[in-house]
Amino acid sequence: MAIAAATAAFSLALAGCGTSNGSPSGGTGGGNASGIRTVTNGVLKIGSQQSYIPGEFFKEGSTQVEGFTVDILTEIASRLGLKTEWVQIDYSAIITGLQSNQFDMGSGGMSPNPERLNQVDMVGYFNSGATFVLNKKDAGKYQNAQSFCGQTIGMLEGSTTLEAAVKRENEKCGDPIRVEYYTSTPLGLQGLLSGRIAAYTPDVAQTQYIVSQNPNDFVPIGDYTLVEYLINFTFAKNNVQLRDAIYKALQDMMSDGTYNKILDKWGIDQGRLSKPALNGNYDATP
Image 1 (cartoon, rainbow, N blue to C red):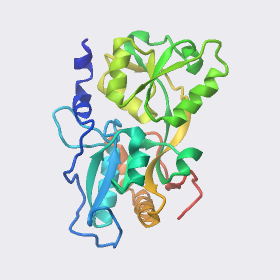
Image 2: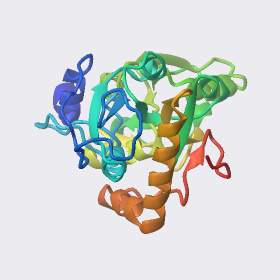
Image 3: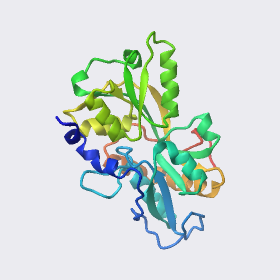
Image 4: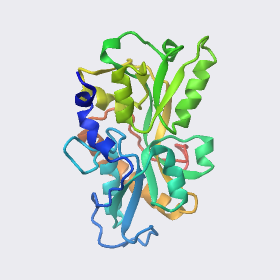
């Protein structure tokens, strides 16, 4: 089928790149009852790529960002007496956006590594990992990362954890795996359908959703995972107050069952946590 038709579910995410979504997307709002410092009083501004499917993205025909991460943060904001505002920004620019005070926190599937943790603090809310999604015509052709030696794969720009994983795999490849970078997952999927790349590397939750919504176009590589990692919310180093408030609200949601209900709503069975992680550490607490 035509590329445009196959990726219709993601068209608004593409159209939204380079713009800001300034409309509140949830939360009770009405002022900052908890006394938490934010860029705009009473508002929790969240920087996000907004094409992290099914975490935060636009469905076809909608101008409202939605997803399981959106639902989690809407609930957290409500508990803190804040409204949410989603600010579109390229994945690779989330950390610099935080550091320049463009928004209060970052979201969108960022994993912890030493380079990032030197720049920002993180609260882990989901255990995931990177895998490969294939064009359906290539079902069964590839079994693991080594199958892509000498091939070109697609990757989201700024995915340093995945870059490190591919670098490790290339140590065992006679002909290395080549990487083509994309600024959004929809563009990566178009590259896959056009034959520019042999596979795209979303995380596990993304892959499940992409395949379920486009069963005639994409297939997973199987149960193989290139690398496992936590998915995190990110915070400026000087905003410990907000980091700790988000951690506490998320911990409460995990304890009272709200967190699991949200993941149930989105059909996500794997990767659930029983408590948040702090800066990549499951045992650490604020």
